[in-house]
Image (cartoon, rainbow, N blue to C red):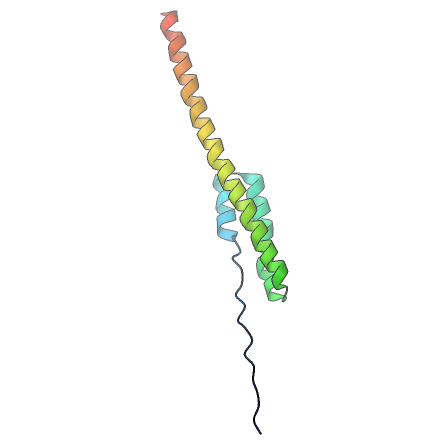
Length: 99
């Protein structure tokens, strides 16, 4: 008697973005980083429960919020540096007229 075994396709777990979202929370943008952490923490539990589509969607959402937080953090740092340069330059310009 011959048994016919069919191989199931191996489903890999989606990226959970947890490390990246924690770093974004610490260094860039707190609110969007926290949203990334919330979605990143759902990826492993949904995958373990067999909800592959839910895990994939949570991974996409975690990646989205992590990337938004990263870029907003970079933009805010650039604006802050430009603001400091502007204030220092303007104050030195005014200082010339005072003396």
